[in-house]
Length: 407
Ligand code: ASP
Ligand code: MG
Image (tube, helix red, strand yellow):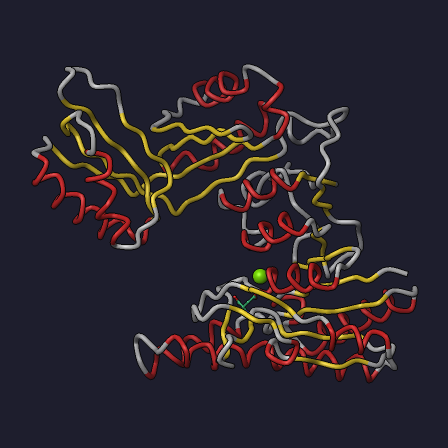
């Protein structure tokens, strides 16, 4: 007998029929002798609809009131799912985040979970009930309703699994697992049976949308066994593992990409201590996150070029700030480009294999793709290329590293 936490996303509970199908799946798991806690998202499109309503009243609604509003989406699905379970003879009880004490900080719209009191859920499980919990929401120490940021139900589920020391946390979604890359870009992308936690963390942070990155961080911190699988078809999905089996470990596990990139360059800035801080300080003061940073070696020993990337939404503001800074520094010129993308190769096998970067650059060169920036970590290599090369680049790399073939 195992304790399993299942999470169903918006499309999986997108209609009354879908909710009934989820109830049947939950009941099947329970009939096989497991204890079940189910975390659900709002019905698909509902959170967007609620945000639309709020913005129709006020372009920038109060974050606190927005949370009161958004939390209703998940409250609808917990009640409907519990009714659907009871209807097929499976005792169930629904709870909002506050009711099971999902305690968060007070950062409305992007709150972080601090603690969960598992007592109430455990009592229900002992009484033979399925526990249905609203994802995406919690409550701060003053009793205010909070939400965890878009896609936050993944994190709710992992946090509940950690608090209850569940045997497995299953994330049901509309894809049947984690793929070597997005199948919409490369139809030969292959579903992975397993991926290491570190690789999943990189994939999530590099733009793969399968899991909210915070949920992966949470799973890592508390060693929650996590599985991604489809609520629309049967299958074992993808298991996120904590051990690296070096024997059959592929060198590369996947290719992630991110279209939301923009880059900015300050040309001819003085090559002196403190300049990098002077350039990036005002950017971070404006709450703009910087991703890649490259500073060239000074060609003339007096000045250098400094390039960094930001989210495309922040591009215009970052450019304005950088222009201001560079006037003060006496830089030669500021340039920028928001038609770029980042493509990343991810694999723990990179640690023990030389020549991965050369192979990657060779594959891109054969397609005539110019690399504009490069950055690496122990288990990833990222390149920035022109946006028009995204599909071609991903396919070329998928092919070069033979990711369509099973390990
Ligand atoms: N309903 C929320 C959203 O749409 C949370 C979630 O689905 O995970 O972002
Ligand atoms: Mg989601």
